[in-house]
Amino acid sequence: MLPWWLLALLIFGVNFMLWGLVGIVRLVGEVMKRSRALWAAHGGAVRAAGRAAIASVAVMAAVRAATRAAIASVPVMAAAPAGRRPHALRPGLPGRRGHPRPGRRAVPGSNSATRPSPPTPSIRSAIRVPLSARMPGSRVPCRVAPGTRRRARSHPLTVSDVAVLIPAHNEAVVIGETLKAIMNLVPRSNVHVVSDGSTDETVQIAREAGAKVIQTRTNVGKAGALQEAIERFGLVRRFPVLMLLDADTRVQPGYFAAGLPMFAVPGVVAVAGCVRTAGARKLAFTGKLLTGHRCRIYALGQRVLKFGQTGRWLNATHIVPGFASMYRTEILPQIEMNPPGLVIEDFNMTFEVYHKHLGKVGFSLAAVAVTQDPDNFRDYIRQTRRWSVGLWQTVRRHRARPDFFSLMLSLLLLELVTSSLIFLVLPFLLVILMMPDLATASPAWPVFSSVYAGLSAHMTLAVVALGVLVPDLAMTCLTAVLEHRPRLLLYAPFFPLLRMLDAAISLASMPVAWLSRTDGRWKSPTRRAVTAEETRARHARPRAPVFAGEGRHARG
Image (cartoon, rainbow, N blue to C red; front, side):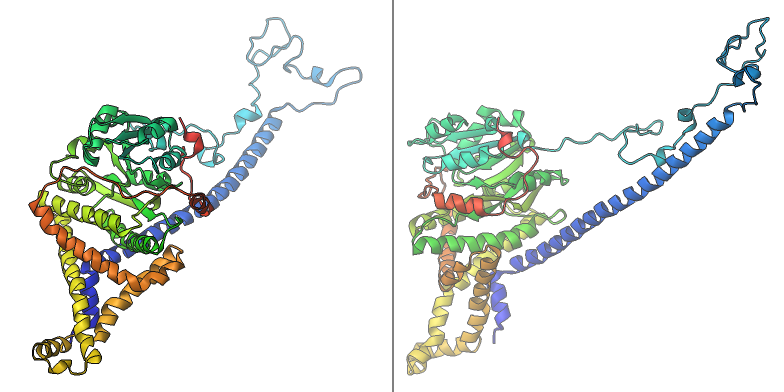
């Protein structure tokens, strides 16, 4: 009998569980690191207070010692006869007529001392506080050992260093809100839009918003438009970081606070954004079902797969999604962004980063951007097919190599195929197992009896329920908790059916990707204008910490 956990492992995959464990280890490490930093900060404050107390005691002791030395250096006054001032009895007293001040030469014939008196030490010169006892925070020049140099500090990246590039093809419905959101975070002069053969008001809206806009002569596809815009705007020369942003994506406050510091990690040349689907739109049942399914994929796929795949030591993610991600511009000339025959660009750019050993990919769950997912089956199937064809086309172009990335990619593709096959066969298996309950005479049928006997010996309805349906329901419950969307539980019975649809699209895309070539031209799904309700829902959420230079004051 096939155990239920093995069936669950075949469907969800070893890759999913492996990177999930890596992600948990990474999360624990980050929590410990933050705890140590917090403890160090509090401990540093305590130590600074102790040093300040010690320094204050040392200063007071030095002041008292200097005072005693100054008092001891003053001559003792003798009792003066009547009519004479006291200091006139002591010859050589400084400041008196006929008695030179200390350091001056005595005049011959005068009653002054022939030897000048030593200078009186002042209180300020008597106080010699060592550098180690200075008050913390005082501006005392640090003494550098001879022959050494100060370590130069690298300039931290800010939003002024980021160029934003938005490719658009007939996006007049949504591009206005996208520009408004990104211009609240980065200088207006950093925002660039390339219209790829748009026939609506995309160009006019972008120019009125204050973005720099160019147009392609014809519809050359998203990758071709990006490549042309990067060259015509001179973004590699002008900016150290380039953000690729879809026209329907609204970057959330705190994106750059979480994303830009990732470039400080050694070797990181690209940072993937964290995608969330817009959930406040007024949709019908179909739209809520499809967006809820995407919400599950995003919530668990990014927290388990993406977070685990983008660690500092184990780094091998198969995609840096092009909806809202950043690249160091210094590596862009080495990436073939628009090779012939590919329908999308983000898989290919990620493969180029790893196969050409350009660096690593970073990812932060706090670098959030909200996008519009399809709300009807026609657009959903078209977009899912485009993504799947793009993946297999990129795999066809980039052959496997003896490296860690190719190994993890091979495991991912193998499990993608096996889980898709199981999901497609699963309805037929359920029908066969349930047939004796539906038709009592079915076990006696000539062909069905042998099939049922062989299948029932290895699988039962309980195994299918525990290995497929229960884990899928658990995924829905977990997503509802993580995303604060309890209404997802209402659509839980339909999510396995959508997974079957995804499996069919994935398998059907394989021969298309291997046997056909595309020109990269695109057509966006049906867009919905951002409503006032969605805007209120976005502003009602807790705001993430704002990065230095990020906000309305960053407008140029």
